[in-house]
Length: 435
Image (cartoon, rainbow, N blue to C red):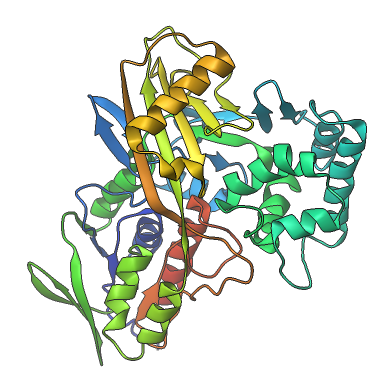
């Protein structure tokens, strides 16, 4: 006799990348889900926004070729990777200071050649960088104990100049955390998957669509086709565990579900967990996590203004990375300047920061045109600070029908879209395996 499956109707709190990945994973198994999202649009901390009739994002994220779970999810809900992204080979360029460009060779040869031919480094520094990567391969990118990125690099005799112009930009871009605080083990996890695998794993994918359209909006359509429901502008006020499930309380009333996956922001997840004694320790663990900001300065120039390449970095400037949205998404004249992690830029107000970026574009690139408008988007808690030996909560909780998802949960990756998607999939699989 085949055992009868228990009725399963999970709720998911949060319509960001983690929550929607969990929802799609469940829907693909024939499990109807209900998603509660407090905002009017989906995407969480990777969402589309409108300004001056121009489609922007709340932050300019990039994906890597090794983000297999995210890319597979996008395809599963109807996306087309070749159409949705501008795909670029690994290339890091700091204007007139440094360039690393990977040739189309088998891995890891492509990286070693890139390091040994990098512009802006002495021959000794190129050897140092190559030896470092070979040493990390030798230890299988696994440390016996976690230390800071800066300590690791100094231990392996990377020069201060090499750290500043190559390793620091990589660390801040990947972990959004300064090298003296950042977890060396987590950075090695990223280097292992992106630079030590296939050539395509190191490719950079720049989205042509806004981040709500790229995955969450498509996922909502996928759910509708599979018997699910997505409720926007519908925040959850409380989760009340019960013997046979969970009660979800919103301003519109209470509903009963078999399970809940809390995929809200860390602050909202902690608030919801704090009221339940068995979940309170997880709330305390989340409360102990600190955060790092990301500022994105959008500058709309006349349409003829363009950069020499789609993505360009600056050295010793407020601006860290520039993205030419004309080259990427056909939004001609639109430049996005990204400033990751904590720093002196936080001392300026938005207008002052935009003016500083405009001045740097003029000084560094000779762009004499004045922007038609600017918009600064400051995500002050954009990511968790990926610090040494950070204790991150598990996807599971002491209550088997209450699960947690989000890029801040335990895993190999820092706060990335891939980390969020993996966490959502893992939480969903806990429900699937319990049927």
